[in-house]
View 1 (cartoon, rainbow, N blue to C red):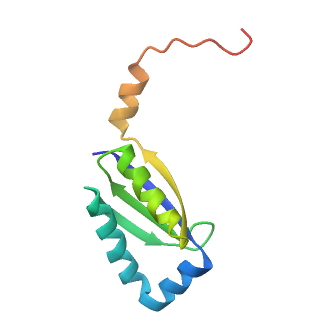
View 2 (tube, rainbow, N blue to C red):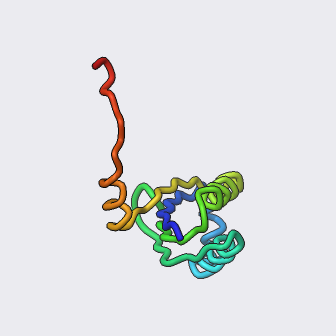
Length: 106
């Protein structure tokens, strides 16, 4: 199953929800959301810095990943950014593919 890194930054409204319910409640909500599209949260961390939360999740497809991102961002409580993660074996497979490419202007 494809693996994704989801970075989330809370809005003011989202932070109020975290303060009210706590981190454990947010983790449970994220678990339920990801499971509802057939996925599984591998790990979730709260952090200081540009992003407030980092989630590593297995999701069945890019469409499922997009649905999670769309839904959470539309809530107004959080902004998300999703990164598709590749295994070493997937990089090996990509490196073996023959790609026809012409440099712009060449």
